[in-house]
Image (cartoon, rainbow, N blue to C red; front, side, top):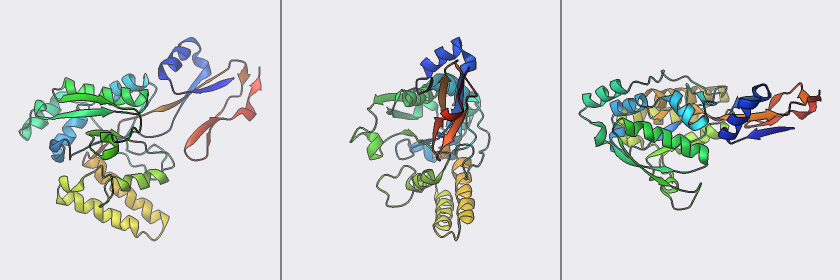
Length: 275
C-alpha cells in the first residue's frame, strides 16, 4: 500500500505517472570536507572559497538526487538544535578563477584522486562535485570502493574529499564532528594545524568550552560558534540534503508521513483509510 524508496530514478518514474501519490521529506545533511593533508592548496583560504564557488549546488541536486534534494544553508540538517546558516554559497566559476589567480594558483595546479564509495547516491554525489571541479580545470581522477571496504583510503584517512551525514537529532553528529579534528584521534579528517594558528586556536578554544560546558544550553551555544568558524572559513561545505521518498497507494486517503524517534522516518499507517 505504501513504500519508502531509496532509488531516485525509480521514484522519478512513479512521480511522472501519479504525482499526487508521492511525497518527499528531508533527513540528513550532507556536508563535504576537503582534506588539506592531501590537497595542500586547501590550506589557503582563497582556495577553499574558490572551490565552493565552483560547485553549482542546484546542478548537484539534479545530478545526484534527480532534483528531489534540498540545497543546504548549513552543515547541519534544518531543525537540528545546533543549526546555523552559513554565508550564502554563490556559484561563480569566473570569480573562483580570479580568486585562485589572486594567490598565484591555476586550476591545473590542484590535482587529487577522488575516492568514491558508499551507495549509488553517494557515487552520483561525489562524481558530480568532482566533475564540476574538473570542468574548471582542476585535475580529478577516480577510484571506486565498496562501502566500508577495509584498508581503503577512506578508512585510513588518506582521502581527498569526504562527504558525511549530520542528522536532524544532532547528538551523534556533534560527537562525530569532534572526532574530525580532536588531537590524537585515530582518524583525523580536519587537520587544524594546516589551516593556520588563528583557526586552530579558535576551534580548540570552542572545543574546550564545549567540553567544560555546565549545561546543555551552554554546550549548544559553543557548538554553534564552532559551526560558524568551520563554515565561515570554508573548512566544511554545505551541499545538498537527500530526501526520503514515499509513494502510497491511490486506494487510501488521510495519508500522513511521520517522524519516528529522532533520526528515522516511517509511515503512519493507523490513520490511513481506504477510499
